[in-house]
Length: 240
Image 1 (cartoon, one colour):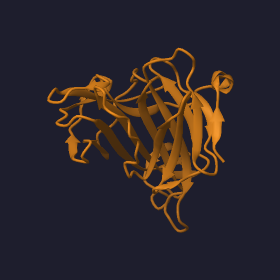
Image 2 (cartoon, helix red, strand yellow):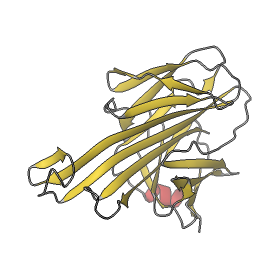
Image 3 (cartoon, rainbow, N blue to C red):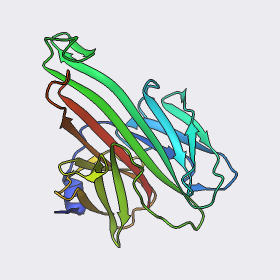
Image 4 (cartoon, helix red, strand yellow):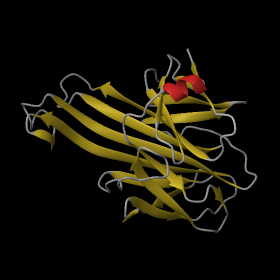
């Protein structure tokens, strides 16, 4: 069943972990004009505390027609920056995926590799981050749709906010821990997705501008794997 979160619970929540996102510097795109795209990691949307590592990271843009343009991020201080020039009017989606590889917690700390390489590991996991940002040209229609990532949030605007559906391998998935961060404000935990993978968020009165809805959860691997869980995180960037 879909869960609905209002301001009372939002204010009661507390941020616990940093997250990664992708976003255009200019939220309204112009055909033929290059826009800077930023990849960041932090506790507040728009304030990056460290640049995502390049190994295992892939970024691209999807035009309204579905045409795909690869993004070429480069480190710039605490960010990764790339450039994208829209060639079509309408809704564009900026995407990144980041397979961070398999790591193990051992008595000597966090090390690379799974249980096959680290038999003393207390935990072994693969970290996977995904992120999607919606960016539209002027007067374009918002038309939410799945990108097709292993783990992603798909939005649907409502009268008072947004309802998101968490998808794992293309199907609604329950139990994702959901949070929200507005530009310049720390992440606030909302709750978990219902059995239908959905959660509704009521936007605070008077709030405007960019925000991200976040979800994360560990998903157990198949028996016999050399690590225990795939630890998924995803971020969905929107403007209100």
